[in-house]
Structures are given as C-alpha cells and as structure tokens.
Length: 230
Image (cartoon, rainbow, N blue to C red; front, side):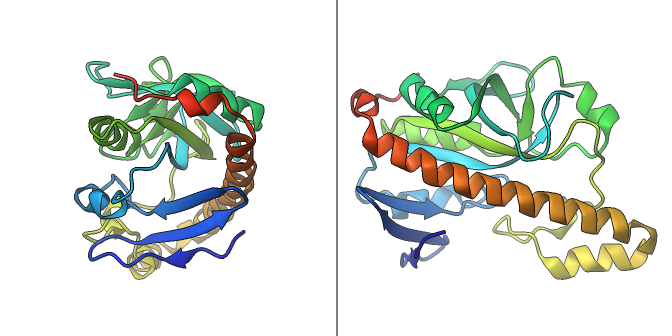
C-alpha cells in the first residue's frame, strides 16, 4: 500500500517507509523466524515498538479466514514458555478493528488437518511459528511488542501442500517446489489454488489493518509509555 524501499542488509530482507508521522521498517524473518540471527542488522536504531505479524492457522471454529486477531500472549505447546503482548498495543489494535484473543500457539511446524488442529483448540485461538521467538529477542532489547495475525486457514481446513518441504534455508517458500508437489498429486490443484486465493485475500486484509493500526498508534499517546513486558 506504500512505497517501501529496500534497506541494505547482508542476510535479511528489510524495507523502510515513512507513513504519516511514523517511520516503519518491515523485516521479513521467514517462516519459523529462520532469519532471526540477522535481526540486529535492522535494529541499529532501537524502534519505539514492534508488531510481530503475518498469517496464522485458526484453531477454533469461530475464527474465519481474513479475521484479524491480536493476542494477549503467545506460548509454546506445553505452556512452559510464554510472552505477553504490550497491553497498550493490544488495545490500540482492538481500536483499529482487531479481535482480542487470549493467546497464539507457536509451534515449529504447521498443522495440516482439522484433526491435528482440534487437539490444540483448547490451548490457543490460532497457530503460528514465529512470535514467541521474536518477542523473546525483542524483550532482550527492551522493545515493547505485540502479536497480530490474520487467519489464513480455518480450523476446519486442511493444508493442500507440505509447505515445510518447499522452504529454503531462509524460511521462504519456493514456488517451484510447491508446483513439483502439485505435479505429483494433480488432484490437489483445485484445493491448492483455492487456498492460495484465501491466503492472498487474508494478506490484503492484514495490510489494510496494519495501515490503520500504524495511524492509530501515531494518533494516540497511550503507547508512548510502553515498556517491554517479561
């Protein structure tokens, strides 16, 4: 939605733009935050706050594709590690149109089937792979953060492809590898195309939400006193 320009880094894709009164740097950490080690290249000037965002899989039936969720906390599957979102940033997200939920679950893999997802529906509202790791790293730098996700696949949807097998070393999905999978299972073309369209629509909704969210954060004063929460 804006003219983001590349930021020169050695290992990590990053882009910068001025949105109204805010300077925004978008850092692409890859699926599973595989580029986390290079994050400090983009934090040479500590930001006032960080929004850890992307797509997620729904774990509860009430969440539809395209729903914007903001989590009070993120946790691992055993609930042994968790990280709280900054409350002022959560409330600003709600003011911008997000739905507040108790937690996101962070796993090292995607859940492909509704049966797998149902096992974790009592633990969290949505599944993703990065927020806990990234927010732990931001806490070390005393940068307040919040986890915001858009639902791509719902609790009742199966993933049409093995996305992990299509990843490169930077956590980026290689289209050629996905196409190779689909070539071996041509009966899955329809579901793959449908999933791609749903994911695209969800990402567009997330982009529009983030645009409004940045404006809310710069218009309100509540976030100025934010501090990283342990």
